[in-house]
Structure formats: C-alpha cells, structure tokens
Length: 382
Image (cartoon, rainbow, N blue to C red; front, top):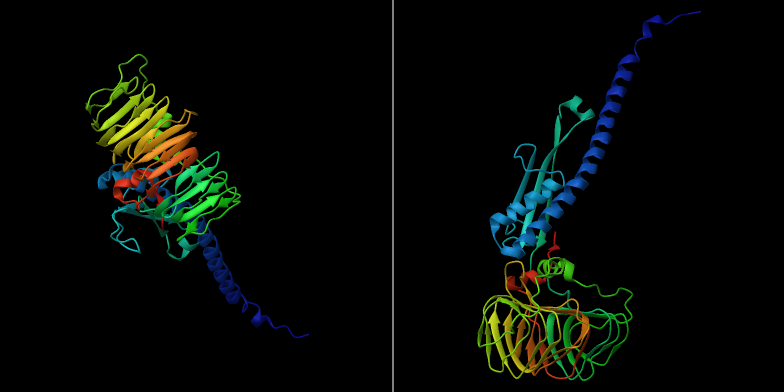
C-alpha cells in the first residue's frame, strides 16, 4: 500500500478561502438586511418630518419654525439632529427635485449612520443612509372642497366654476340645468342631470365622504377647544364691530367686522344687511339665517383660526345663506345642518354640511393659493 502523506494539507488553503467568502457573504446579507430594516424607519421619519414642516408652513409661514417643527418631529421618531451621527436638513423651498423653488413645499433629508456588524471585519465600521421626503403645505388641487356628509345635494340652475375643486356626497347628487366644471364629482348614491366640462361623475361610490375637520388645524382647534359662551350678553350692534361674545345680532344697516373671533351665543339672524370684514371667524351656536344679505367676509390667513369663517358643529337647524354677489372667503362648517344657499354669484373655499340645496346663481371656487393654505391639509409629494 502506497501512502501519499505529502498531500494531506493541500486542501486547507481552499477551506480558508471558502470560509472568507462565506464570511463576506454573511456580512453582506446581515448588514444589508439591517440597513434595509433601518431605512424603512428612517424614511418614515423623513415623511413625518416633512409633513410636520408643511403643517407649520401652512400655519404661520415662518421658515425657522418650519425647521424646528420638522426636526422636532424627526426626533420623536428616533432621529435627533445632533450634527454627528444624525443630520436632519430642512429646506423650504426644496433645493432639488420637481418642487425645487416651490414656496409651498418642504423638503427634509435625514442622514444617519448605522453600525456595521460582519462587514466591520473588512473595515466598514458604520454605514450611512440618507432618506428624503417632500410635503406640500398648499397648492393641493383636485381634492374635495365640498363635503355633504349625511344627505342629498341639490344644485339646480347653476354655473359652477371650480376646476381645482371636487365635491363628495353621501347620498344622491342633483345637477339639474347646471353646468359643472369640477375636478372630481363623487356620490354614494346617484348623480342626476348636469353638463360636465371637466370631471365625469362617479356614482354609487363605495367610499363615503369623511368630515375633513380634524385634518384642518383651525377646525380641529375649535372642535377641541371651543371658545367660552356668554348667555345674557348684549347683541352685536352698530356699524363698526369688534371681536367678542354676543347674544345675537341686532342691526339693520351695514356692518364692518374688525379682525378676530366672534362668538354668537344665540341666533345669527339678519335681513338685507351688508357685512364686510377680513380676518374674521364667526363661531355660531344657534340658528343661522341670512336673507337678502351681501357678504364680503374672509377668514384669517394665519393663527389658530386660519381659514375658518363660519363654524357651528352642533346645530341641526337649517342654515340659510341667501345673499347676492357675495364672497365668503373661508371654510363654512355646519356638518349636522342642511344649508340652503342661493345667490346670483358667490365665492368660498370649503364647505361642509349634512345636506345642501341651491337653486339659483353661480358658484366660483378658485384654485388655492398660499393664503388659503390652512384649508388644504399638507400632502406628501415625494
């Protein structure tokens, strides 16, 4: 028998090479999986931070506050801007991408280091990952701006010019003898009549309309922190009026509202008056009746009531807004009431009601701008 003792150790170098290759593959697999796992959390933090920054931008438009809001939100998600291991960069407007230079957008980049495990054997002590997100504070066009939550919508003999605004109805929608230019028309019931120049109606939708209030900071603020009421207070009178709490309105002539919050702890009832003012929020608690009036009222553009013009979350009594050539610049919020609104022409930016009926006139809803930002919740764009 011949023994080949000189070849017994020749396989060991190959075994060592195979082990090194396996270690390298293990490093790649484990570290890549770990990075991918952390990247998901980091992307979520970037998304949330961009959304928080856009919300702050819509609220007060101050760049330094946008940066603070975004970085604070990133910190809540585990990515604190320390300038060493984690860097949270906030750009408004964005520096790159399709929204570069857009004053209504916020860009957030989260750059963070993550420890290496097996790959540290080969000299990679840490791995850096950068995630990016962009959110729009305003300029969100095409979504609903009319919400009918619990009944039918009847809008007859109208000319509706709202190409960047949609309507969503929990019930039937009637557009008899009406020309409709809207970006979306959705009803859980049937859609009757109408001549459509933009969107085609979608009827029998399985998705009901949802109250947008809690997505809008000013509406949410009034819902969660209702202002004090004042039973027995004097009514609102005179031609030049100031913010405060009143038992109702007692006037017959023109009335100019100074900017601020008006609590009407009683009926808002007037006929044939002209009401003007900017930066105005009216918080109503009783009947809301305006017949033969002329409105030129706009909501605040900043502050806790930004975008909110008329608010009454409780009333179930019909709301009458029968006014000629009126501008109602802001949100009209009567989620549990039927609104009867008729005018030769009117403008507003957001309306929420249980039902709506309108049988004459024209409706114009312009595209949102930075001054209407509070009414259009931020959306992730990238």
